[in-house]
Image (cartoon, rainbow, N blue to C red; front, side, top):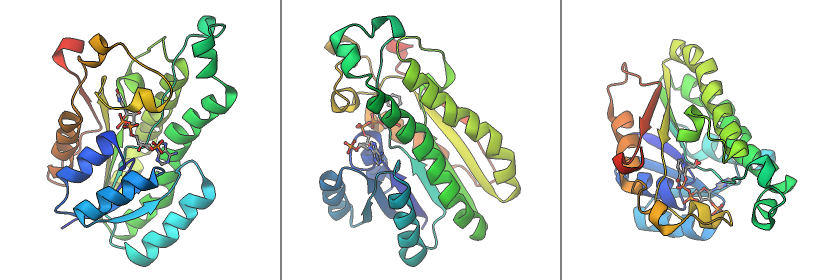
Length: 238
Ligand SMILES: NC(=O)c1ccc[n+]([C@@H]2O[C@H](COP(=O)([O-])OP(=O)(O)OC[C@H]3O[C@@H](n4cnc5c(N)ncnc54)[C@H](OP(=O)(O)O)[C@@H]3O)[C@@H](O)[C@H]2O)c1
């Protein structure tokens, strides 16, 4: 049995991944405490409510892990937030509302800083345990230039290149790391971040179960095999 910490586990991809890995020892993390607690009860898993962009909360999570989950061997970083809008669109009311400086900071703080904070904080524990795996749920936006969402694009490129910069060092310590880069997924991600995509576009997305299956494929590989980055798309939205 593996000891797996999943962020963003209260909803969407993180929740679907937790369900698929229910036979492992799970520590579920999310800022949405209500959904997190319910899922943890359903799966008989441990949970810790934590905003991964908050330094104090991540340090509290570290103390919790050291005390209660010290055999940690896998981190799955799913927590993420969204915004979109080209610079030239920011005079439009909707785009202005979802691109306040606070929102831009939140996207970079969660997607980039939060993911890097999780890796920086917990990779040393994986190394101490002499074996480990990190899976980041990145995005098509981490590998392609998507002009319609430059801030989100920058946030996901940040962790994509961070992963590339640390992967050889981690490998020397028997820890492997993968970016799973999905295209559009049918979740409440957009609605949760005060945006809306047209229904005809949403229906071309991947199901959360498809993304969770991809994560499990990476998770199940023999430890000596690593996939640095894997892309997954709905063929109708390629
Ligand atoms: N949906 C897509 O089309 C799509 C496509 C490609 C990649 N992705 C990536 O896939 C990952 C999962 O997305 P999803 O579609 O499953 O989104 P989701 O349904 O909105 O789930 C994301 C979860 O992360 C939590 N979260 C957000 N900020 C957090 C923070 N600072 N600390 C802790 N938890 C936080 C959210 O909680 P709150 O509700 O409290 O904010 C939510 O429970 C994200 O990294 C996203 O960038 C999504």
